[in-house]
Structures are given as structure tokens and as C-alpha cells.
Image (tube, rainbow, N blue to C red; front, top):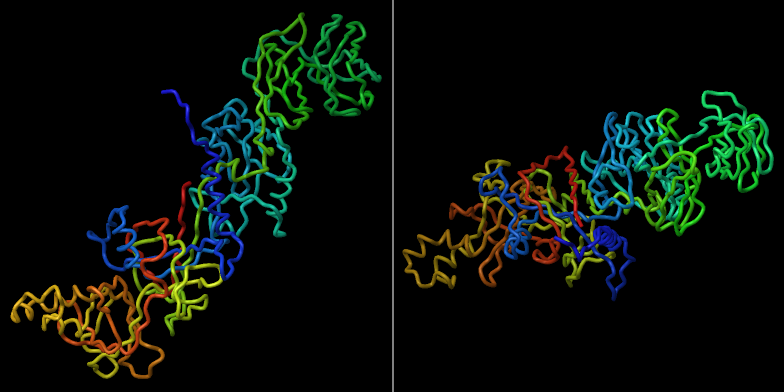
Amino acid sequence: MATYKYATKELSINNAKKFLHLLNAAEDTSTTKNSVILYTAIGRSTEWSNDPTKDEVQDNIQSLDYDTKRRFIGAKKIKNADVSHVAPRYNWTTGTVYSMYRDTDEDIYDRQYYVITDQNNVYKCLYNNKGAASTVKPTGFSTLAFTTSDSYTWKYMFTVDVNDADKFLTTGFIPVKNLTSSSGTEEDDRQLAVQNAAVNGSIEIIETVNVGSGYHAVANGAVDAGGKFTLSLTGSGDNPPSSIDDFYNGSTVYIKSGTGAGQLRRITNYVGSTKTMTVNTAFATVCNTDSRVIVSPTVTIIGDGSGAKAYSSVNANTGSITGITVIDKGTFYTRAQALITANSVHGSGATANVYISPIGGHGSDPIGELYANRIMINTKLQDPEGNFRTGAGYFPSNTEFRTINILKDPILKVNSNNVLQATESIANTSNSPDTLRFTTKLTASYLSMNSDTPINPFSVGDIISNERVLNRAKSGALEFVTDLGSTARNTNALSNAVKAANGDIVFISDDPAQSDTSYYNFYINNVDSYSSYAAFQVNDNLIASDSETNIATVTSMSGPEANTFSGEILYTEHVEPVSRTPSQIEDIKIILDF
């Protein structure tokens, strides 16, 4: 089917860049909000329906906006240093055939055209020796493209530094960034040098398509004498020059070494008896007897840029073109073609493709050039997160979680120091704390103790309610049970009380602020209540969902530090149970694909 509409890959790149830009927005003021505040939120301590097998994500309002959020445990703020563009990782391995950059390849971003080495250096493949295997590892930090002995041509792009490697380098992805300035590290200095040295519209590679036949060349000619417009060759060597007049007319001579090296001229006349050639433009530096030259068919580059120059190489046995070497990559080309010509006496049929650099030049835009349209967010959860003693910003290590989420712009009940505020406000750069507690903290005293040990204590995972709603259920004061008789109300009181007010215990700890060992802190989430009734209050007697026995009395409580159902979930992932322990760091890496 013909394609007439196409959303370009640059759209994905731009969206990823814009996402990152939002996180780097200017500081908010009291009247404006320019920032986007993101948190990595973990949640769901309760089991899946077939635990440990995770449930599928349900992409609907009830699941994402309500159920997932009410099960949040805690959240950690995502900072600028926690986010990076990433691209697929391709390790350099000897014997592998890597794809080469071609500006006409519509599938280039699906190919392995760049590599990362064991030194975390990243190189882009500009030429793969006609699809041969790479056997020589690229090394070095040159701002210029270079060719290894296996005839691969590489462009050094950047090095992944230690910090970025720790946060964003995985078996599947490498971090990628563009620099506007250097932080002073060697890695930044190198990358910035490459970016600044990039040449817009340059031609690094000209690849032969048809090699032709019947061509002649002098591969390593020795200069006998040189003049402003002439040079004479000796007749010695493995491939001596022809003795036929005009034989090299139309070909080019390239001074490959010695005096005058690097000059390329077109031959307008050749005298076979003296091996003397006349060139179209005067030599800037006259050749000498130490000069060595290549005489070969002319490569003419035609395009809308300027300055690109190249010479060809010829197989002496077959008379075919074996390759084209670019000696000046030129500038500002957007289209170009290469013509290979000698003269009417010998050689025909060779053609070649010219490959123009991306806009800005190779190495100018690593994010765009490696198609790093994914964003990785790295969050490390340590113990403790927040303040264990006060519960400010606290979420515990001795618990489990089963969802990982990215939450955007929650409405906060606290300031940047996790201090409760009289007025809720949307998260911004001035009021957002590093961590948020999404659980309700209940401080309660056990009613029955055996010395310092509670009798019939609660456990993590218990669903709790309270005596206040239990009594309402028994008396018929809960609206949804008023039609029941007294016997039925008493029989169903516990289950109805749990329906009217409940919460899941996420974590339990003794209260370090109390000398009385009966006091404990209970962190609960998934809190639910009927109508406008408060689920839990100070002085409530807590009960378990399977018993009417009063177990502990609430002496103080502190609700979640953000509005439970506020903010947007940009990403959610269901995982098998992750058990947090005090000695463990959870290294969470989230990939967003734009």
C-alpha cells in the first residue's frame, strides 16, 4: 500500500526532548507554574489475585485513578540528574557485521550502526567494508573519522561516564546526551570537542556500487622531478607508469606522502616517454623526490555544497575500482553524486553513492543521530526514605510493593520540608519535598500487653476497622444496613463495619517517641470509608477484619502528605512482589518510549 502520510522519527525525538525540557524548566514563582514535578511512587503491599504472579494492568479510570493511587505507599521525587535519553545498546564484538550510516537508509534506526566498547566509548560506523565483519575494536577520541585495519571507518561520539553508567547503562540501553557546555570532566570535554568539530553537510564516505573494469592506476609512484604545474615519475616499482602518451589524461594525481602531501590535481596532459604529467591547477607546494603519488581515475563530486574531494583506488589485476577515499569532506551539502571517470582509452562502468552527514554533521547531535527517543528514569530507594521518627516523607523498608508508577504534579498537603500546611497546593519547584508518605500514620496503644509484648497484635497485611463504625452497624446507624433487624445487624455488623471503614496495614513499628512499650505506629493505605464518615479518628479502638475484639486505641494520626487521588499517573508497571529490607537498595529503572 502506498504511503502518503508519515509521522517522522524526529517527532519521537522532539517529544522525548520536550519531556526532558519540562523537567529543566525555570523555577516557579508564587503566581506561575512552569515546572513539571514527577515522583516515582511504589504501591500495593497486598497480594495479587494469584500472587506472586502479577495481575495485568487495567487501563481504565477505576484502576489507574482510584485503585492504584489508594494503594500507594510512598514516592520519591525525580530530579534532573535522574533522567536521561537512552538508545539501544550494541556491544562491539569481534566478528560481527555492523551496519553503516547511509543518509538514504529509511531503516537505519533499526540497525546496529553504532557500538559501545568495553571502555564505554561509543562509536558510529560510517563504513563497514562492504558488509565484512569487524575484527578491530575502535579506540581513541579523535574528532575526525578514522579507519581501522579491518577497513571499517568509525566516528567517535562520546564516552559514558561513571555516574551515567551507574544510573542509566543497562544490558539493553546506553545513556545519550547533548552538551551545551562541559562540566569539566574528561568525558564532557571530549564530547563537546566532537560536537563543536562536526561539519554540517559533510561527505565522509563515498561507496562504490559498480566497480567497473579496464581502469589503470599507479598505486605508489615515485616522483623524479616536480614543477609548479608538472611532475615526472620514475619508471621503477611494482606498478610502473605507462609509456603511452595521454594515457592518464582525465585521471587525477594525489600526493599521498612526502613533500606536498595531501594535494589532489587533475591531469590534463601526459608524456609517456618522460613519465611527465601536467595538472590543471598549480601545486601549492612543489613535489620532490621524497614524494609518493597515486594516479587513478578521477572522482568528481557534484552537489550543492562545496569543498569535497576524493580519489579512487584500482585493483591492478582486475582493473576494477576497489574503493574511494575522501580527503576533504566539504561543507553544506544536502545532495551530491560522484562520477568516476578516466579517459576514452581505458576504464568504464564504475558508479558510487555519496553519503551526506546528518544536519549539523556527524557527532553534532548524539540524541538525534543514535535515535535516542526513549527516556530512562532512575530512582534508587534506600533505607530509610524520609524520617522514621516523625513519619515525615517516610516509607518503610520492611514491606513489599507490587506497582511502580510515575506520578505527575500531585496536590500536596505539606511543604518542601514535609510540614503540614493549612492549604493544599499543586507540586512545584518550591514546595515539593524529596519524598512523600502516601500512607496514613496511626499511633496507637495496645490494650493488652504481656510485659513489653502486645497480646493478639496486628500484622502487616491485616485489614483493620474500628469499634466506632462497628457500633453504628449494630445500631442501624449505617444507612445501608438500617433495613435489617437487630439479630441480622449483629450477625453482619463486623462485615458491614469493614465495608464502612477499612485500611491495609503496610508497616508496623514501635513508637520511638514513647517510653510506653504499648505504643506502636501503624502505616496503612487503601483506606476506604462509607459516605462522609471518617475511616479512622483519634480515640478509635482498632479491630481486625475477622474479630470484634478491640486491640489498640488510636492516640494520634497523620494522613497522607498528598491528596491521594491527585496528580496524573504517566506510567504504571505491575511487578512480582519486591520485598524491601533495611540493607537493600531498590534500583528502579523506567523506560518511556516516545
